[in-house]
Amino acid sequence: MSSAEETKPKDFIREIIEEDIKNNTYGGRVHTRFPPEPNGYLHIGHAKSILLNFGLAEEYNGLFNLRFDDTNPSKEEVEYVESIKRDIQWLGVDWDDREYYASDYFEQLYEYAVQLIKTGKAYVDDLSADEIREYRGTLTKPGRNSPYRDRAIEENLSLFKRMRKGEFPDGSRVLRAKIDMTSPNIIMRDPVMYRIQHQKHHRTGDKWCIYPMYDFAHGQCDSIERITHSICTLEFENNRSLYNWFLENLGIFHPKQIEFARLNLSYTILSKRKLIELVNGGFVSGWDDPRMPTISGLRRRGFTPQAIRAFNQAIGVAKNENLVDVALLEHYIRKDLNKITPRRMVVLNPLKVVITNYPEDKYEMLEAINNPEDPSMGVREVPFSRELYIEKDDFMENPTKKYFRLAPGKEVRLRYGYIIKYQDHIKNDDGEIVEIQCTYDPLTKGGYAPDGRKVRGTIHWVSANHAINAEIRLYDRLFTKENPMDLKEGEDYLDYLNPESLLTLKDSKLEPSLSKSKVEDRYQFERLGYFIVDPDSSNENLVFNRTITLRDTWAKIKRKK
Ligand code: ATP
Ligand code: MG
View: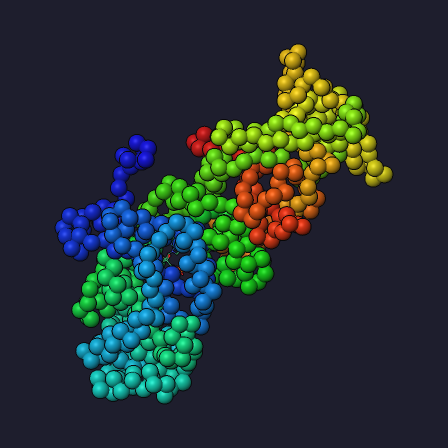
C-alpha cells in the first residue's frame, strides 16, 4: 500500500461500518452480500458492487455471500447463473460455500406473507394490473383504496392459499401490503407482494405458481442471511422505507441498508436491459463480445482482474452520481499490461520491402528484448532476411515535415535490426505502392550506427518468408456519445452506436514466435498496442483482439489539468 492510500480518508460506508463495530450494533459482525438477479451477464458496474461488498467483508474480518435474487421465472436462466459465478470468480472474489438463492427461501417468504395477512397488514386484491396502476395515483395525485382492501383476514388467508394451489389464472389476483395509498412515496402505496405466474422456475420447477415480487423478497432474504450491511445503489433509496416496513412488521432481523452511487462510464452503457437489446438485436456478437462492458466481454477483450480492481480502488465510493471517464479504466489496463506482456513484432497492414544488397538465400537471427520494463522476461530471436514487411503507413511517398519514417532519400531504423535506406518504390497499375526497395547497412546490426549518424525513426517489421498469418480484430468504443444514456426527446441510444467499433484485418503478418500462442495469451505488439488471443482462434487461424492501443489518453488529460 502506498502512503497516499494509507492517508486516504475513509469513505462514508466504511465510516458507518466502523461506527457499528464500535457500538457493537450487530455483535461486531460484518456480513455483506452481492445479490444479482440472474437475468443477464454481469458488467463493470456490478464489479464495483462485488468488489466493494467482498472488500468490506475481507477488511473487517466478515463474511460475504453470493445470493441470486431469482424471483422472476420469466426472465431468468441457468446460463446467467453460471456466467455470473464464472465472472465473479475471475475477478478473484470468493464466496466460499455461501451461494444462496432467494428461491431457497420461497417457503419462508410465503410464511412471512401469511404472517402479514394474519396481522391485517396484507390483502388479496382482485383488481387487474391496469386497474392497480390506475388506482395508484401519481406523484401529484394520491392513490385510492382498492375495493378489496378491507377483506376479512380469514378470506385473505383462504384466497392466498388458493392462489398458491393454482386455482386462479395469471394476473387475476395479487397479494398487496396494506400500507398507505396516499403516501408521498409511491412505493409505499400498497405495493404488490405476490403475483400469480404459472411458469416453471429454473430452480424450483413447477413447485410454485405464485412468486414474490423482488421488493418483497430482497430485504427479507438479507434478513434471513443475517446480512449486517445491505449495500445497494442509489435507485433503491425510495425502496428503503418499504424494506424497513416489512422487516419491522415481521419483527425479524434488521440489516442496515446503505446506498451508494452506481458506476457510470463514458461512451458505455451499463444497464442489463439495454445490454440484452444489443445482444438480441445482433448489434454485437454476444454477451462476451469484446466491445461489451460485461465482465466476460472485458475478459475476452484482454482486460485483467488486477486492472479492474485497481480501477475500482481508484474510483472509490460516493453518495452522488457522476460519469467516470472510460480513459481511466483504460489507463489501469495499460499500466498492468505494460508490466506483464512480452513484446512482439507484428505488421497489421503489410507493405513489402526488399533489401537489395542482402543475399537471396540467406537469413539471420537477431536478438530482441521481450520486455524492456522487466529484464527477467529475457530475450528472443527474430529472423531477418532479404524480404520484409513493414506497415503501409510507415512509408510516405511525399513525406510531411515531421515524418521520420521511411521515405524517398531517407533512412530508418528497423527495431532490433539494421538501418535501411530507401532506394526505390514500385506501384501497381492502380497507382498503389506495392513494394519498396532499400539497402541495409551491415555495420548497424542492432540498430546503432557506428559513425554516430542520426536516424530518428524506428519502425517494426517482420521477415516475409518467416512470418505467420493471423486475423486481427481492432476495437473502438461501442458508442460515439460521451453519455449515451443522456438523450434528447425522440433520440435512441442505438442512434449513437459506433459503426466503426470493429475492424477486422485478415492479412496481418506476425513474427514466427507467435505461432505457438494459446487462447488468452497476451502480448504487446510493438507500437500497436496490447493484444490477446481470442477463443475463436485455432491452429489454422490465429485470431487476436486488440485490448487497447498504447497511447495513454488519461495521463494526457491529467497533465492538462
Ligand atoms: P442494471 O441496472 O444493469 O439492469 P441491476 O441493478 O438490475 O443492473 P442486479 O442484478 O439487480 O442488476 O444488480 C446486482 C447488484 O449490482 C445490485 O446491488 C445493484 O445495485 C448493483 N449494480 C448494478 N449496476 C451497478 C452499477 N452500475 N454500479 C454499481 N453497482 C451496480
Ligand atoms: Mg436490479
